[in-house]
Image 1 (cartoon, rainbow, N blue to C red):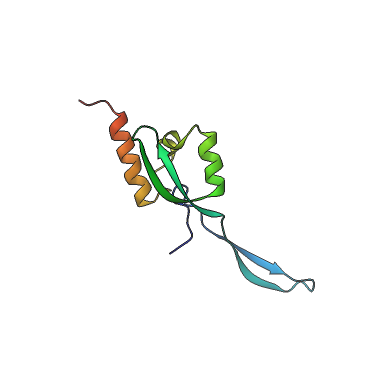
Image 2: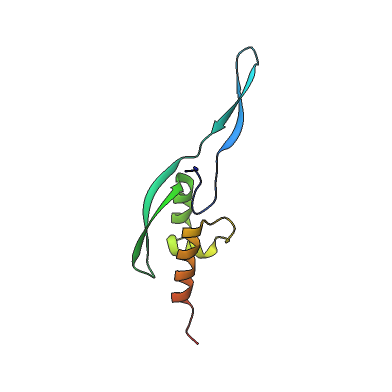
Length: 96
């Protein structure tokens, strides 16, 4: 299972370990990934997602899970997050 944030698509970064003798070897900088359950106010459901700690701060900054997921572009969202986004949009859009 890859270590990717479900909501923002953040992945690891690659770089170098640099020794005192300036020898360089490749390394990975992993993201701070957490399993959390987020509650949707419009759907009254909890969803279990793996998201980065920085994403948790962004969600609270944007005013909650629903507002954040509607604002986020579809390209960075995972399949499960896209399904949640479609459900929320369906509830929020007026029936014609």
